[in-house]
Image (cartoon, rainbow, N blue to C red; front, side):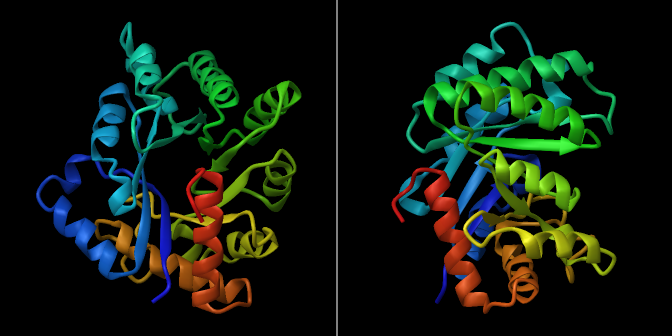
Length: 259
């Protein structure tokens, strides 16, 4: 049985409170050997760090998601810093920029994104990057960060253009695809995915959101990453087994786990 790695799941969220253990059991049964549980606030970061269990293949990313930065309280960034180094905390984020929603002033988003990028470069932990309707802004800040040193990270739930993907790859990042790539209308996104080098492509669920076809409209969960993997394997002209092996190796390499 091949193994899959879901590089983005919000396991701490309330949608999973009633059956989190069953969700994780279904993931294991589906061949999901690794899950990166991603935080969005200081409280969420602590919850994902508490969920981390490397022996069970569950790891954590801690950070402040851009749409929640306006809600950050005094001391929240220090709480994130204190989580770095906790067992199973292997990444920072999610962070990034978002012009679609107007929940956080853009300069505040930029401040926190810069903090995450600098912390990533200081610690060596990869950064999980959210980008919505702001490619130029993201690339500008990534370019500035790259001028200071190497970048390690994931362009999470990628939905942008081939040009943006190429720029992110040139900067040293990995590109991750979620359930949208399976949708009938997503031919352009599948064409982008087909151009991502095999050693830099990742898969995710972004659960409980973005359920893949044929599960749209239902709560998403890590077990469903197999649908995205199957779609992308076909797009990339390889078998599901080989694609699973490759993307799992990619995730483990980026997150500093034994391959």
